[in-house]
Image (cartoon, rainbow, N blue to C red; front, side, top):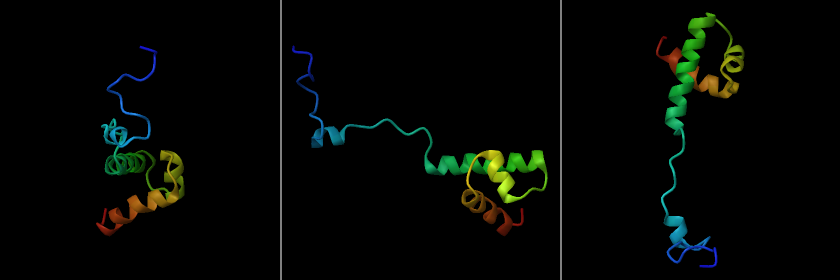
Length: 78
């Protein structure tokens, strides 16, 4: 062998390469949402009443993400 790709290896950019299974991502978007919601609830427990901006800083997400988590909780009366 010349140190190149093996005979059974798909060529880069080929359709065979595109069909190879990819490793799963660490967190799906749904799982990330669950994690952020848990972190937000824990922060509220730890900090008590606080602003969305402070919550965003505390858990390391942007204010839009916080609003997306908080609004359904408000709508549910939590």
